[in-house]
Amino acid sequence: MLPRATKLIKIQLLILFLLAGCARLKQCAYEGFTRDQWQQRDRVIESLQIRPGDRVADIGSGGGYFVFALAKAVGPDGKVYAVDIDTEMNDLVAQQAKKEGVGNVEVILAKPDDPLLPSPGFDLIFTSNTYHHIDNRVNYLTNLRKYLRPNGRIAIIEFDRRGWLDGLWQHYTPSEFIKREMEQAGYRLQSEFDFLDRQSFLIFAPNQPAQGPTTAPSN
Ligand SMILES: C[S@@+](CC[C@H](N)C(=O)[O-])C[C@H]1O[C@@H](n2cnc3c(N)ncnc32)[C@H](O)[C@@H]1O
Image 1: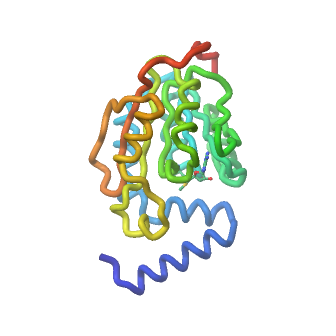
Image 2: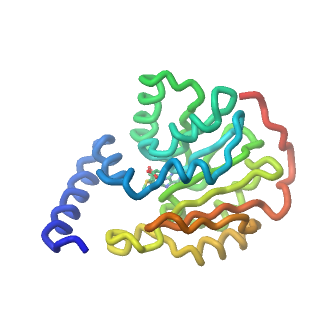
């Protein structure tokens, strides 16, 4: 348990960050200072079983916490689309990709009700700590199916209220809700991992392939 004073300072800092509207501060608010200690990014990436050449979308990619690890996993023949409704976050990701010479990351400015992926044929749609931000989720998730190739998957990492701030900010979704909504949207649970202390980590596949063209275009 954190002492009460420390908690209050953290809350005040977070409020300041959010009000400041500065992209780097927003990124700090999303990622915190200790995330590497609990997020187990490498183990998450390993669990996703991404293959070289895969096309992956990270919806609500924020400051890119997972984007560059995903880009490494898909390799030079694959592609990662960093999708967000926040231009400032997209700019941060684009700047980092340019600075580090990462050529297989592209940013997409999404609409709140549609990620606006450029084509169908995605191997994986990944989303981390974003699920609770999405409105009309069953509609949104149903719409996502058209972007997946047959055997494509959706991976969802979401706070589930084990973190001390999650309840306060309402920044969480119980995993039972996610499972129910995904089922309503036409997906079945494929894998469930329990190694994250503060988040659920679920992978789903569509019950049936979506109608329409499914061939992946060349990256
Ligand atoms: C808490 S941050 C998570 C960022 C990143 N995925 C991570 O794990 O650090 C949530 C992000 O989702 C974005 N977002 C909110 N609603 C969205 C939507 N409907 N479509 C795409 N992105 C959305 C926000 O702009 C924000 O960057």
